[in-house]
Image (tube, rainbow, N blue to C red):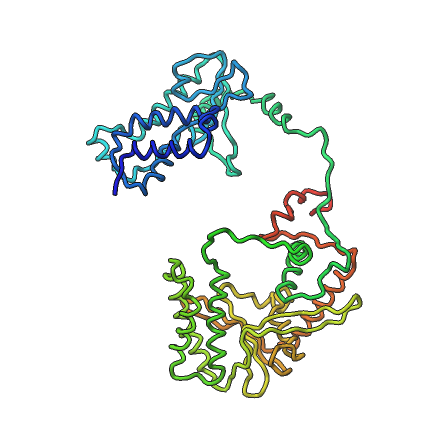
Length: 481
């Protein structure tokens, strides 16, 4: 079904007037510019013919993007803002040529997605470079006025800008004749003074130090990692209990992918903890399809995540088949460990992706990673203490349904599904030492924050609390933060 553009435009305007009083819709400079632009669209509506109603929104938005609103409010009566064509037809005592940046003046020549240059020539359309020639003509004409100020932006939206080619050529020409353009002072100084405060009172970077009674006494292993990396984020998350809201209608992200893969492997290992059955791959894929089913309508999940999971499933089963004496005793199992500190007990909680019992009775703890794997040096230095702390919990019998025992191996299994689909490593065969060092470091860290005078200072980190910490606004303080 198709409809005339004029009819769709009339219905659109009528709906807008019904939703907003016409006096407000057409008021002010923006309303006047909108009315003029719509009048031009009505005049050209017959040439557009009929279109599919579903295409109207995109077409209208594209046509409306050409409208320009130049506000007159708070302007001196003798000040006028003109476009190039308007300025070409009028004279003024003083001209300010603004926007002399490449991409603005002259504008960029975007390739036409529909017509090639030969096609445009056969249709009698001018070459795209003609617009640059007209812009050059306007610059040469206007720059010859009795009094001219040339202006260009050094940055736009934080991005460095390139001066217009004509401004650059003018500067180069003058330099060749041992001349130069006069400086913009005092105009830039005047502009800076518009926003200059009367005085500046430096404020120290925020260092929240809540009383001991408000500091949490129950920490997850992920909380410990956050406290090590960015204490301020830990304070916002656990003390202030602030959580970032998910975007409305957001597509599944990499964290969701990791959760889906973990859940599928957990369901399979709960069903087949020991020796693998002959139909192990079919069972694992069946669990995977059940887990992925609610998200398969997403193109990214269907086209990329699911094929990767199929490769991961085959790879994981091949690795499990290599040692049939290795039996999974727990999957996605929760654990806890109580730490006695001078200010009171602290409970450490965690969840192990998989715990296996080896032939000699000792334990192996596996952590699945669908993304990057921590470097060995970070684990051994205590910067990444997840697996060592899980080993400490296992040695003390803190995991549900898992008897206390010595831990023989700590393993990271990277299961990205690429090429190769997975990789085991790094592997740590002296977990007792790592667990003891991790516990010692954790206790020293918690003792420090059991002092009410110890603040939760912000560290440079790209997390959900970076905007709240506003670290870069305090980075120029005298204390170096």
